[in-house]
Length: 308
Image (tube, rainbow, N blue to C red; front, side):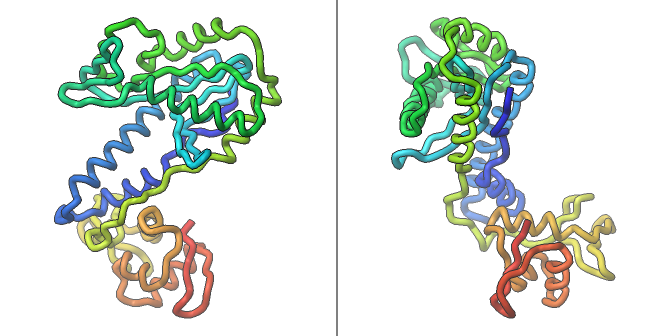
């Protein structure tokens, strides 16, 4: 298995994580942001849990992409797991739902209690059509694209009205891959073509970024103490000190500035850094930004630092 696009947290997830930890409960949209973050995190955890089953599956001579997302013909689509093999392409839609999941026969819906969702195989087949168009546009040979829906949450009770072998729990992935191999015994791609397709897709990968307006007035500034999680550290005697637990850390501002980057973007001015770090003396902020290795561009009031 050649994993050329490993799963990573998307910029959107990183942004929501930073916002959710700093968002004041007084924000009118507090519940929305917390719920949205948990939704994104749940999806990521579900997809990440597939790593184990990929490692134990027989995936010789395959190219694997996780969380592939791109835009083609003005249509954006995302594939949770894509396995390219010599004889077929396997496209997996993962779901991390818990509870009793019902998939009625001849229905286009997935049901959990009073909630109704799109059927995961229908979602997978939509992504399949997008992928087919994309591969055709790049003149790659047509290969069968097999779709499957995988439920990753161990607290999921899956109720299927018909025995569809492509709706499974994650523990069945290795066995199902072996079964699918027997359906497509004839090679279509060479090893070179597999890698060419994989690296082409990787170049086209565009992770999702946050599009919602940031609730800036309700984002709490301050340097977080890694020992007690209080956001009240102060710079004193060339180090950060937590007033609650007395923990000291010379570099506590760096993860705080990275949270700023996840929320507002990778560049920051001295003034904005002073506000976010709760520093009243600009020369101290300037010193911290310079000694942290952040590259500076511009002069005087127009100077910005790139948070890496």
